[in-house]
Image (cartoon, rainbow over all chains, first blue to last red; front, top):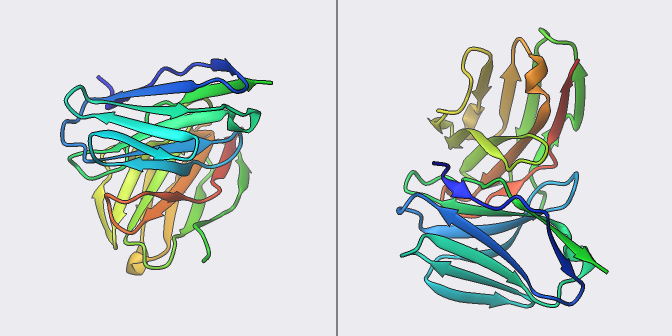
Length: 110
Length: 113
């Protein structure tokens, strides 16, 4: 079993819609969770950080964490074409390292 | 504040040749990562340093890959000899510690022909 599982997509949503990106992880020792965005040909950049159960909102982005279910998600409201990118889930596990999933490619259709 | 600096940005070499990548992390960052990223995949950890100590190199193919981080600052990743399958983007990242967000360099795109 991979440490981090993400649907590779692509996930296509119309402009203005809500995009929902999901991630499951296997290491129950995971303490922190990062969502990175990676534009094509660029390096990943952090967009959200969550470390406690529940929701965390930052502008159009909401991260949701459920440690019991080992599930973390990212919601993007009012999706824009500029949100088109690959979104990488990255739990920091018991061995204290940032581990990445395969990423979900998001396409926002104008 | 300067970000993570990597060089070179691009490298094309023939198979069986050696190649080296260099990384200068953000000042004050104790943790340094080298990741490999293939097209359409997420970054895969090769090695993680805490200061000058390699604390996680389980994914590093030690028969041909080597890395060092002298004085706990700059780091180099070497491949010798390179194989066709090594063609990928090599990303360096650094963080204040092992549980903080990682900041990435621009990466080195390696093509082995």
